[in-house]
Length: 76
Image 1 (cartoon, rainbow, N blue to C red):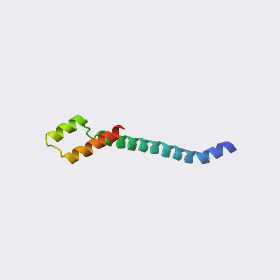
Image 2 (cartoon, rainbow, N blue to C red; image 1 turned 135 degrees about the vertical axis):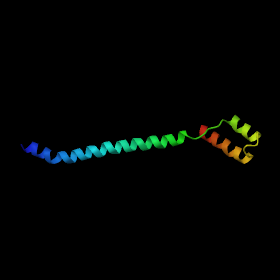
Image 3 (cartoon, one colour; image 1 turned 60 degrees about the vertical axis):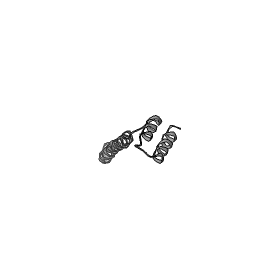
Image 4 (spheres, rainbow, N blue to C red; image 1 turned 120 degrees about the horizontal axis):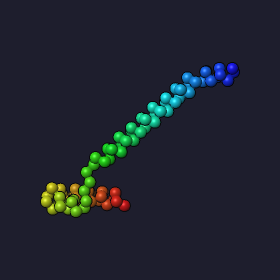
């Protein structure tokens, strides 16, 4: 009976801890999914596409160089 009475005293705390662990895990998974999806919505260009935009006058030489360097930095 001593073991049964101790378990009855601890059970609510264990249940609360389990609920916190599950809720915390779900929150972390949702946040990670949201953060990862934010990066997938960006538009990517190839160097050839950037050169065509610059040649067509749709972007300045400065914008082209910045975008080109960004692509090069991300591929290394």
